[in-house]
Image (cartoon, rainbow, N blue to C red):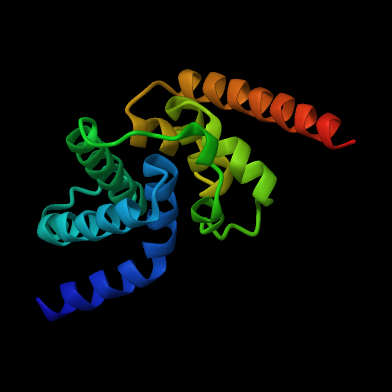
Length: 166
């Protein structure tokens, strides 16, 4: 039990930031993302001994995070109104990814969920297409096409933003 606890603690330290960033990309709210993060690791600890090893533990916990986020969002549907004008505020900046500028993060957060999710998994968390497909439970070809489409949408959106500021 102590070995499991030590291993789990190390795992949480190594992966909590990536899981929170992923939760934030799904929920678009830092407080909800924190709730999702906490519930994700509670579930991961509960099922830690039963992990089958058919994927990496990191992919497994990201999948748990996705399920928790969707559960939380579904329970909030009746209570949440999303103000599209305030999508890109200081909450989004908390993604803290050195790979992304604030402009790109803002544009990413405005994509639809299916595109935002694949870009986040592939380009921010740097999962390969196969692992992303496993997490999302979709074919690899679908991941590839969504990534391609999402990148094209981001590129167009960023270019249009650059033209407005020029």
